[in-house]
Structures are given as C-alpha cells and as structure tokens.
Length: 551
Ligand code: SF4
Image (cartoon, rainbow, N blue to C red; front, top):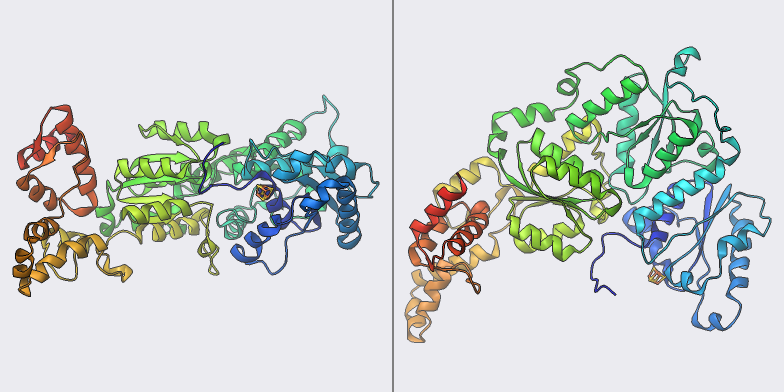
C-alpha cells in the first residue's frame, strides 16, 4: 500500500486510451467497472475533443460478479465491432478487471471478428500510464506488421536508398499523442522544419494515424523518436526488425534542434545544415544574448518533469539561458538512467520519484528562484511562493491552448523563452526593489508585470507599520501585543529545533538580501551555524557563512 494523494500518471489503461483516442479507425474495448468512464473527460475536457474517445467499457457492476462476466465481455466486443467497424481492435482490462481474470483479449481472439485484435496485457499494479501507452503502440504495430517481418538474414535497407530510388528522404514522426505536452503544435513545427531541409514525413503516429498508416512504417528511411516515453520501445523494435535507424535527439531548445538536424543529416546522408541556421530562424539566441537577459545569469532553477522535457529543460536552462540548475528530476522511471546522466553533467544527483511531497521537499531545500515542472509543481511552487512555468504533462486545460504554442524546433524555442522568463520579476523592478525596500506598492516579491498584488507574507509584514502610523500602536501596547506587533513587522525567520537562533541584527542583515535568494541564504547560514556550533546567528555569522559558501 502507498498513501497517495496526487499521482503524476494514471493507470496503464489510460495510456492505452491515449493511443486509441489519438488514432483514427482504431477501437478499444476495456473491461472495467462502472465508473471508469471518468477517463473520457481527459479527452473531452482537457484536450477539448469534439467527440468521445473510441472506447467501449464493459462497465460491470457488483451484481454482475455473481454471473458470467466473460459473457458480458464477449457481448461488448461484438457490439463495438458491429457498431464502430474499426480497422483494428484493442482489448484490455482496467485495474479491477485484472483481478477477476476474464482474459478479454483471449476471448476476442477466439471470436473471428475479421479485424486484427491486439490483446493488451497491462499490469495495472506495477506499471503506469506512459508505459501503457508505449506498450500499446508497440503491440499494435507488432500485430499489424507481423506479415511484413523480413526473414532472418535479410540485408538491412540502406538509409540513403531514397537517392537510388530518385525521391526525397522520408521519416516517421513517432510518439506524439493526446495528453502529451504540446504534441499538436510540435508535429506542425517539426514537419515544417523537415520540409525546409528536403525531408518528407512518411507517417506521424499515433496522433492522427490509422492502422493502415502503421502498416507503412517500414517504408521510412529513419524513425524520429520525438517522445521516448511513448515511442521508445517501438523505435527500438523497428530498428531491430527492419533495420530502420532511429534519430533520438529530441529537438527541444535551440542547441537540441541543431543537434537533431545534424543527426538527421548524418543518418540520411544529407548535406550538413548551415551553422548559423538557429540565429536566422529563432529569436531565442539573440533574446538570451541581449543585455536585458543579463540579470537571468545564474538564476537558480529547479526542474521536475517527464524525462524528455526534464532533460531538454536542463540543457536549455544551463546552456542557452545561463541559469544555474539546482535540482533535476523525473517521475519517468523507465528513463531514469538518462535523467541521472543529465543531472551528473550538471553536478547534481537526479531526483527519481513519483511522490509529489518528496519533490516539494527537494524544491524547498534547493530554494530556487524559478521552478519548471508539471501541474503538480505549479501547486507546490505556489505554496512556497516561487515563480513557476509548466513544461510537461501532467497538465491542466490551460496547457492545451488555442494558440500555436510548440516546444520543439525554432518557434518552440521562442515559446520557451517567453514562457520561462515571464514568471520572473523583470530586471528593473528586481533592481529597484533591492534598492528601495519601503515602497507601499512595489514591495518585496511583487511582480507588477503579472498585475499581482503584494504577496501575502509581505502584506502582513507591512501592516503593523500602517497601524503604527494610524496611532493604533498604543492600543496594541495597552493589550500587551506591542512586542508581538514589532515581531510581525520584522517577520523573523522561523526557528526549528536544532537550528541556531537569529539575533535582531542577523535578521536585519538577512532582510537586506534580495527576497528571491533569501531562502537559500537563510538555509546556508543555518547549516553553517549548525556545522560550526554557533548558537546565535548575528550579522557577522551571516557574512561568515556567505564567505564560506562563495569560496
Ligand atoms: S479500475 Fe482502476 S482506474 Fe478504474 S476506478 Fe478502479 S482503480 Fe480507478
């Protein structure tokens, strides 16, 4: 048992639903209890689809368990095939159905339905949504391509066979799906990018593909693995069975897009792309070099996302924006190794967990100035008062925007620059608030470009001053709360057991530190005091600690 409040991923059958709903001409019969139809809302509300997902639920109830549930499964399968006439059928179970062991896939296999049937075995108690999506896509392709498998020993087609055949090279774009992060616009962006380099798209899958399209997968000269969480196993299998090379660089960020094009040109034996293409095609390189971005240098950023977006974000943050990455992690256990390697390059230890409280704790300890995460980190960052941008699923409805908002390619880099910088305080305001701390409106933590009011903590700290001006300090003194009022004005750091006590001059010195790095300075100073057996933190101790950590 694991006490769970929020989960980053749904059960694996939701991953299978994502594949079915992303495609056309495919239907999914899901053996599931009454109530599991809640998953429809992910597609009709978050993705705002104009139709129900192509899923037939058996929706068994308690009273059905006394009867023949297998018969119910068979009836549902037959009705779904008769009504929707799909080109291929997925059959599987949800968590509860897995316990009653009706083997719906095997039942469907014996029904002579006249369409390819894929029996999904998704262990709901050990695997999750992305694994379910990847397994479903892989099993579906395996079933549909069974007859095309080359005999052992057949020579691999050369990736530059396009030249001999007198046509442009063509690739498959694999992995984009509904409920993935910005997949709709990423496909458009990458399709355009490939077109400019003389490369055609053979099949995009699963998004928008039909089973008949999947049958054409081996016709591509290379597979582009855009979302390894969903397409990784399929790409590896196609490489093993059909010899199709895989382009694994995910083109999120200017540097990654450059590397992606270079990898493609090597694989397809094309001319190398122009070295200055990024500067010509994306505004991000110039924006991040322009002097207004100087204040971004060294900003402390904490990243937690699916593996693909976490790795991409860490590279952009460190190499393209000059941020300091102070935390990197993922909930994608299948790709933990890749995230660990990326974290190691940055001198960090990756956080691999699906417990959002562990992420929130690590976030608090790292005391970042910006959080890049999922919808969960948006909530945690809000609680901690840290600016945040969402970079990965799980997502809410606002991350399926009406406007064009890719993450990949040149335009994706522009979108990323804007959306990551937006939550931060602008340079001039940061500078002025650091210099003049007593403004009644532009108080610490205030970000006027977001039209937000004073943050609650600062408002509370400000109130006693106003009360004093209004003469109510006498009333406070009369009922013995003057000292409490004075303390509220100072907003002292909380003292937890085992930490040193802050003296008044230590607190005053701490308050001079700009608010967005104050949390980090406070933690560092307390650690320093503890390590050096200091009982009271004075101004001098704070500066000793500062000198110690900047060595
Ligand atoms: S079967 Fe699984 S997904 Fe459906 S309601 Fe039960 S626990 Fe949730």
